[in-house]
Image 1 (spheres, rainbow, N blue to C red):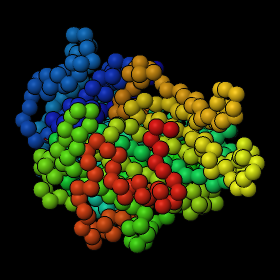
Image 2: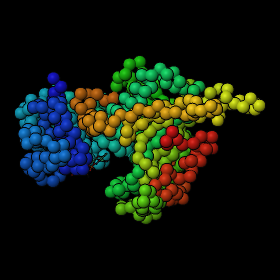
Image 3: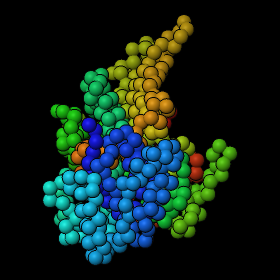
Image 4: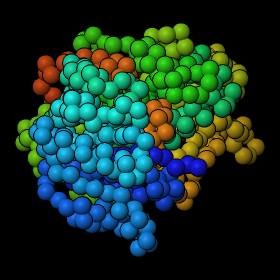
Length: 495
Ligand code: NAD
């Protein structure tokens, strides 16, 4: 049977993440039979709630999944609430008593998942107490799920990691990067490793440049307070973008497994050049949105958003060029960009191939025979909101003349099949139940990503940016376009 057996303890059980993502995901797993009789959930937070009140809240969070009355009753009966201040040692005693009781009642085999849906500054105090108050069990599994952000730079990340590692082994720690999800790793890997026609061209002999865009069409919305202290570099590049790049850069693993993929991703990240501050200034640019208009709607500037400093120097846009120092990628730039309030929402990768060695269709009276004017082959991997890929090839224009005409082979999964596919958190929680860490970030990856990003941050912090520098509803500031044109390239959005 598929049934998974565990006690979940959710720290921050009254919070936004728990209510919007975790409870609905647990319910989906329940409905699919991954959770049946032998699971229980303890929600903790400072507020004094009864089990009944907590169950009503959980009930409310899954309404839109249209559960039957019986499903609702069965599912929520596994939920228990414990008022708990994470800094109060006494409270862990109550937690332990309840956990032991539930373990017995539901025969949970001492399997425990601790989900820290709280601000990271509490992670250390929680894990320390889990150990000292013996809430970690001797003979079941004990796993820790934590959310981003994992530190604010290398130093703070290392400190946080040391605190957690004092209690949990690396393979017990599940660092969520919800962007990563299974689908993306599988998508990129399927295209690369399932198609010899691509993998055999996947190097500096045939590829000109690779572009990764994570574009958002919204502003900061209600996250202004958090975002203004973070910015796009830390919020998006350090984690999501470098994860995508590592999947593109990595060597093919001998077998598709958690361990091998992780090893290859770490090697890939280690081969991305850590710039000097001078190189960082040359190869990375930033932006902040000003007011703008799109599709008849008007948008305010970032500095006018709620909880944002009126003179904020926080970047809402980053573009950069990464250099990979290894045999495979020497000379191939990886351009990345991400931003808020851009023209369109979407995550996509464009692999731009080199032109043919010569242009055999050239005018014979001309001596120049390079093929610069033949359109490039482009492989586009769509990740969000639609998934699929497209290949741009050259054919012949219909008619009596002889003109090259680019055609597009396009495959997208239907919106319907995507609707039926499991939600990111659902998959990640199931992975954790099954002990599969493939889709979570290993410390070595976090550490190297910070090393790459820290230099850029330090370099930027020494200068005052000229913000705002792009209108809402555009694809970012001019400097992001110059970054590519200086190398003779341009951003591809609709190939
Ligand atoms: P939130 O503020 O909505 O919830 C925080 C929870 O912690 C609440 O339940 C609160 O009662 C509890 N809490 C605070 N101090 C406590 C204490 N001393 N003792 C016990 N409980 C205490 O926050 P959130 O949006 O749910 O985010 C939680 C974490 O997840 C954060 O680290 C955040 O960065 C991360 N995250 C959230 C989302 C999201 O969609 N909300 C997405 C990605 C990452």
